[in-house]
Length: 404
Ligand code: PMP
Image (cartoon, rainbow, N blue to C red; front, side):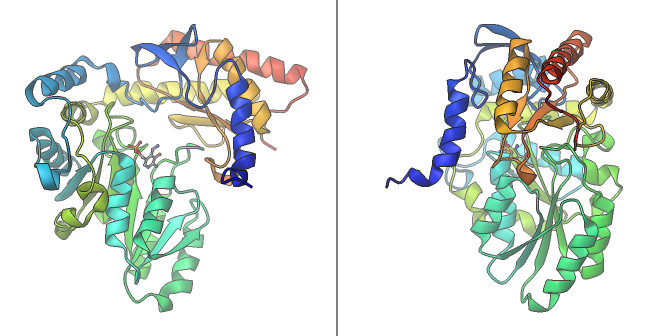
């Protein structure tokens, strides 16, 4: 017996992927020519799996800010802000985010993953209760483990299930309770009924944290997210986000309407015991913020493309997992069918995400697309053309791609 035996089912699946001409997990891109075009494995590809919702990775203002920051501050931060101090853009980015969200406490972290660790694992301890959506992102699950608080899950996007769990565990909590939801769920592209969740939290007198990694920049006034769109941003206690999607950079943040939250910085292990965001990443995120805030035209373009692709896939016989949103996912049967379908899309010049268990909720095998404001008319045509070819192949093989 070896230490790897317990991973056999997982390794078998990934061995199959590795044997394909192009490996879906870790696609080797040799060049990017725009936010929506790249070369990979000798092909020119339209990118529809990058989370580059507003297309800012190639925005000249964002690129300029990153280059200038390297010239002014160098390439790396060499350590934590607690030990090595803060750079100009760490601080001004926090100020800008506080102003944008109307929240006095903001802590910038090196990734969005670390933002969830910083907020959840610091706020909650062994006497507290974390009540999370069953389909939460891995960073939320990991944060719960790290906190050593009791963790309870409620049914996905189901305020009634949350209500029942809170009622059930009320008597047994000696500390505080935090409910954790996301704004837009990254795999199925479905949106949380945030106002209903807020109401349940108020009824039970518990805190609520929302992870808006995929929804900032995309929903709400000035792109403030799903809670803002639902009119309840001021009722949210804790808010986490990332710069790796709409902001076209890398990094994350946690924020709160509670002033004391920001003072917990030294206790946030994923902030204190790791290097601060690079000068280029912080500067790019800071330059992206006003573009996100003023980005109604970008949001219009993004939503138009999202509706077109959603509608186009339906016309081809695919059944998107959710109503239209910038994430459009379709279930594709088995993992082998998923790998074959993904490969055929690559051959047609289209890159999407292949998402297989265990990284998906409900053990779904998904082809997942994320749309971008930067997608051109021609890009959208390529997306629908590639899926049209896939639909024809699957039909000829007797495979169904409509939801059961
Ligand atoms: N939260 C959610 C809901 C996410 O989907 C992700 C990343 N996909 C993260 C947090 C982590 O963000 P980052 O990539 O910046 O670490």
